[in-house]
Image 1 (cartoon, rainbow, N blue to C red):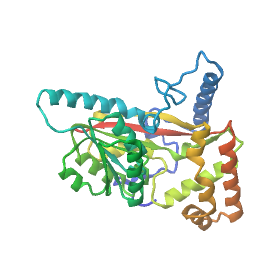
Image 2 (cartoon, helix red, strand yellow):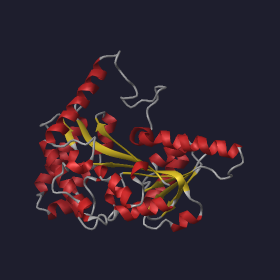
Image 3 (cartoon, rainbow, N blue to C red):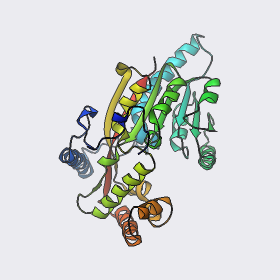
Image 4 (tube, rainbow, N blue to C red):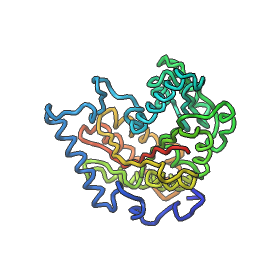
Length: 336
């Protein structure tokens, strides 16, 4: 897997159900399946009983509007940003500071979450950082289309944030599904700690690939096989397959005090037509051409098997009863 962090013990465990990861994570395959059964049983109850139907649970906000991507995937951090925003407004009124709330999205990609956050906090200055110039161009177009102006997109790496720090430290720095791809997560997190002001927050959310399961159980064994290959390819690229459960230990290595780290876990499920398209829509193509297909064939997967996987993805996307669920780790850390 490569050098994932300075403590090799924390890099990789031959046991995916490591007993040392702390509360909230399933300890074995049976517990994981029980967790998912409870989740989908509750969802089915909500679907079938109008009196129990909770629009918050089903992806709608309190006013009945469809949740944004930031609310859906990064809702855990919104209250913390709101708290810091209120404190900033009080300080401005008291003339204690002149600058705006500054928020950094590390690995912003196409900018959907970045734009959502900027729209939610119009008084803030939001910066989206990514190594891909093509992604940043897409993000700029998306922001213009949404009419959100209190943000900028910057090309750069999490491993070199000095230029951003010179412009002023941030009140919040966050990532979403980025740390798992870093060859050295701890070094990247140390850089994030350096650009956050004292009293500010670092917010991280990462999945645990080994917990990913397709639903209904047993009906999509081909996709489960494909997903095991996805995990192997991710490992071969130097990524971490169970980053969600390692965030706290990585942050401690990066210099954050234990008592300043708040952890949580949740299940993310793609069980709507839109959700299945969002998660699975690109995989039929990836299974037949491109880097994933090439790496899979290098590992001994036949072209016929890849074609079967591509068809299985298409079937899963169109199956109204199908879902994919994965455990995620979420962390909010205060910088002291």
